[in-house]
Length: 500
Image 1 (tube, one colour):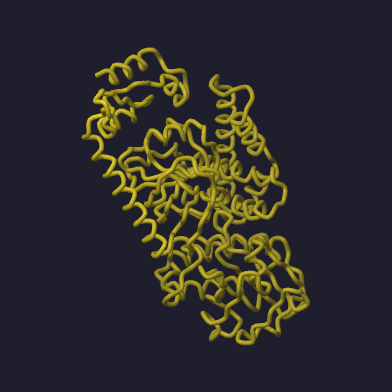
Image 2: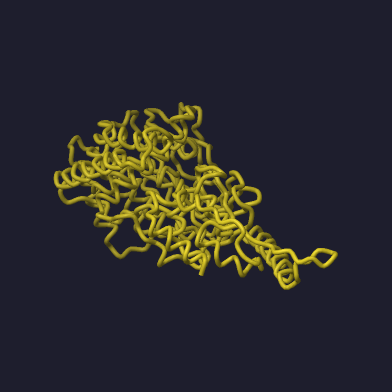
C-alpha cells in the first residue's frame, strides 16, 4: 500500500463508487478485487466465500488463474484460507509456503507468490469468507494494510448478507449464511412450534458505510457515547434496580465497557479509515466477537453478549431510534428469539401470532417463562448462540419438549416436525371432546373442575379448558410481570375484568 494515511480512505471511496454502479454481482466482485490489488500494490487479490457444505470457493481473483474462479475450493480448516475461516483471525506471512497449513492448489498458479495477508469476512462475528492479497517478494504487511483489508471485508460481508452473491452459486449449493443449524438448550415449556424468527432486539442494519467527513463522524460518536453512558447511569439509579444481583451486575458491565478507552479508540480509528460511526461500531464489534469466540475463559465468553447488547444500544443512539415496536409487523407464525427479556415485554406481542420463545439466558422459574406457560407456547432456554446465528425471517423450529431449536431446517426435518404438530393437534381435539362430558364420579356426584389463573392472558383459556370457573387466582403474578409496583387502580381494573 502507498505510504500515505489516505490509502484506506482512497480504497473505501472507490468501493463506495463501485457499490453505486449498476453492475452484475460477478463484475462487481471482479472490479473490487482489482481495485484492492491496485490500492495495496499487491500482485494478487482473491475472495473465497464459505458455502453451506463448509467449503470455501474462489469467487473472484486478480492475479491468479481466472479459470479457477468457482472451481478452486478448500475445506474449512484446510490450507491458509481454511485456517483463517476456521479461526476467524488474520494471517500475515512473509513466506506463506513455509507455514505448516499451506496447501498448494495447482489450478490457481499461486506457487510463485510468497508474502500472504488473509483476513476473515465477518458479519456479527460469523465467518462468511476470506479475503487475501499476495506478493512475489517476501514482506510483512503493515497494521494499516491489515486494517484496510478488514474494512473492505466488512463491505463484502454486507454484499453476502443481502443476497447479492446468491445468483453466482451453482445449482444444488448454498452459501453458509443459509446453512441449517441446530442448538440444544433446556426445556422450559413443552410443545412444538414451527414459524419464522423475530429477533426481540433486532440487529440494526447499517446501510451507510462510507463517511464524507471523519471529524464530524467522530463528533457524532462522542455525542452518542455520552448519551449512552448517561442512560446506563440513569438505569442504575432507578429504584426498581436492586442494589445487588444479576441485573445490576449486567448494567455495571455495560457502564465499564461504555467507558473503555481501548474500545473507543478502535471505533475512532475505523472512522478515520473512512467508515461512518455506525459502520465503525459494527466492524469493531464483529472483530471483537470473533476474537472472544475463541477465548477459553468462561467469564470472558459470557461477557460477549454484554458487548453485543452495548453495541446495539450505541447503534440505536447513533441512528436516533428507540426500542422498535415490531408487534405490528409480526408474521402470523412468529417465534421470538432473545438473549433475555422481561415478562411484560412478552405480553406486548399479540398472542395469536406467537408460536414459540427461544432464550439464550433465563431459568425455568423466571417471570417471562411463567408468562409463556400461561400463554401456552413452547419455550427453549439456555440456547447459547441462537441470537447471533439467527436472522429476522429465518425459518425455525422450537422443540420445547427436548429444549432444541432448528434454524433454517431442511425440508425432511420440517416435514417430520409438521407431522408431530398435527399429531398434537389431533390429541388436543380428543381432549376438547371431553369438555362436553359432565364431570361426575362413578356414583353420580357432580364435581366442579376449576382452573388456576393469574394473568389477563389466562382468561380466554377458561372457555377453551371447559372449566366451571377459576378456583385460584394468583395475585402475585401482577407484581412479577410489572417493571414498577402496580398501582391500586390498575389492580382493581384487572380484578373487575376477571369477575365480569
